[in-house]
Length: 193
Image (cartoon, rainbow, N blue to C red):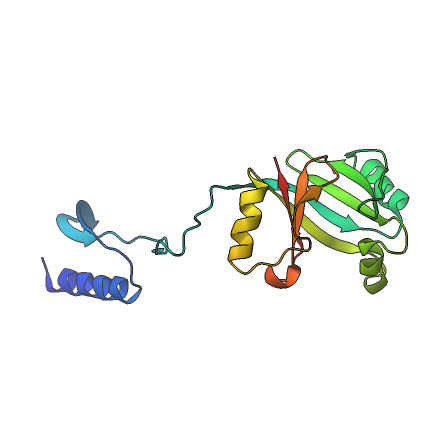
């Protein structure tokens, strides 16, 4: 091995050691310029090394993005935008008084958009629209395979939920909302699939 190659390997090993990455050595054929030499090169792992305490003890798994919810001051106008201008398939407006909203779902190939309009003055969407007059992104909904395990696990990790237990959501499935202050400023809904 040349001095250059030895120096290069030393730098790589120091860098990997500095990054605290596991580096079991492996042998591979490497071409340097026109020469082909066999070297002992450290294997660098790009994944963080988790300790058992970092891993979830729960058996739940997060799935796909179910929908993105948008609070709107005029649901008919918003529905017309997605249906008439953008050509999307949209549902009928459905009242959900137990959640304080009217909903319209916009069907996309890979997910849905949920349009939300307040149902009464006590609606959580009304307080959102009072702060954001033209509406805007309200929450994202992620699918989970076991909502009860998910709730227990996120609470054990210091994530607050807006309710103590799940309740039935717009799709007729159990849902729970995670506090936006614990989720990088985003209201996150978990939905059982």
